[in-house]
Length: 160
Image (cartoon, rainbow, N blue to C red):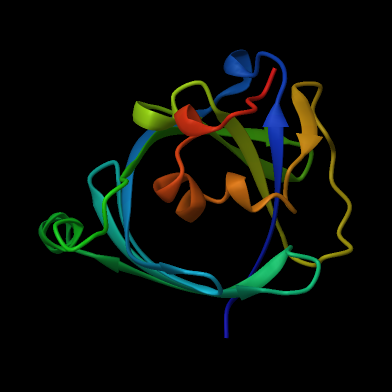
């Protein structure tokens, strides 16, 4: 069983000079219930189908199954997704021993920038780059599945 251990942070500064690669991502959800999601993603010119289980009590770890699929299959599966597609550019930045994924959202989530780091263990230490802000791992609003249902543009209180 694959376990994803991930932490999320707001981005408070300029990371652009450190970007090593960027990819456009479009994703939708076939199922986005509390505790489980089935996601279709087009990342660059590749398709993926991902199933995620519920988060643990710390909300850092959860089961994740991801399978690469053809671009044609991903495009077809996107037509089955519920309303609220996620459109973002993912930027990859290496800091210390880890690669940060910084998502710059577009469309209804325009203005939101979130950095994620995947860890091998919950107690693994990692370097916080200068552009990292407040941790939002425990705030479900920042989950992509939640953003597809209640986009950032609809939030009463927004990041400053």
